[in-house]
Amino acid sequence: MESTMLSPQDALASLIWQIELGATETIGDAPVNRYELPEKTAKPVAVPKAAERPVAHAAPPATADPVAAARAAAAAAVDLEALRAALGAYPHCDLRRGARNLVFSDGNPAARVMIIGEAPGRDEDMQGKPFVGRAGQLLDRMLAAIGLMRGASAPQEAVYITNVLPWRPPQNRDPEPAEIAMMRPFVARHVALVNPAVIVLMGNISCEAGLGRHGITRLRGQWAEAYGKPALPMFHPADLLRTPAAKREAWADLLALKA
Ligand code: URA
Image 1 (cartoon, helix red, strand yellow):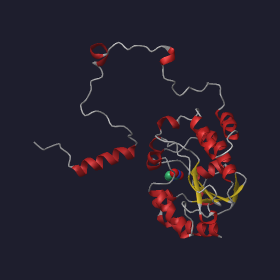
Image 2 (tube, rainbow, N blue to C red; image 1 turned 135 degrees about the vertical axis):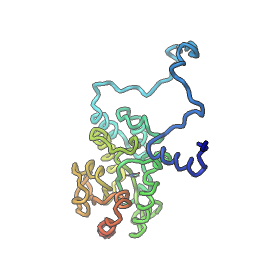
Image 3 (tube, rainbow, N blue to C red; image 1 turned 120 degrees about the horizontal axis):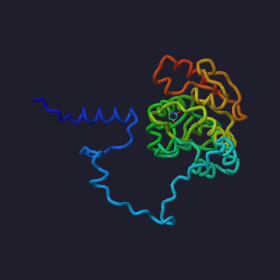
Image 4 (cartoon, helix red, strand yellow; image 1 turned 90 degrees about the vertical axis):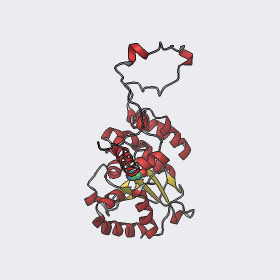
């Protein structure tokens, strides 16, 4: 009979495949027949007294308006740390429940250029930093080509990077309009606190949040205004990984940004 043992390489490939599909937890080695559990093995569970019960994420009242609550929380944030804390305490976006980390920002807050991406992916969720995966590495190379770097201390050589959504959507699905709407006040406050000279809107979701429009192929390269700042829509680096031919337009946009 043929062996069903996977080679280490196949096992690794299978694991990577499952992670890409969105699996986020490992389970036990041995199968569990859950139909048997209730009567045979379940022990009586002691109900803790009210004072001992853990305080779960309080479910927001059903009548609360998530966008109004976001506006109030964002407006009350007096600096970037307060804004990060306000996002961390914001209960209305369900994406937070599936995410490992809140991904707030990276780079120099004194930068003249602020980049607004879409949402964290798997690598960003794991590291708690925006644009650290393959798309992020391409973004760093694109920025370096025009003399910009997220780690630079001089504001004219630096960039500051954030996303519309601070939590990874499951299976990297597109954010829903309601999720974008409730995060928009936080993004607007983020821009106001950083006060960059210009913004780059990376990809469709970022254009949707900042301009109320999408269609990046038409929007890219056309300066517009978002969050009260001059804003340049650009192809998302993930688009460039999928469609390398679009790098020509991206290069033209980078030169416009540099100018
Ligand atoms: N794509 C984004 O838009 N943001 C990230 O942080 C990573 C990938």
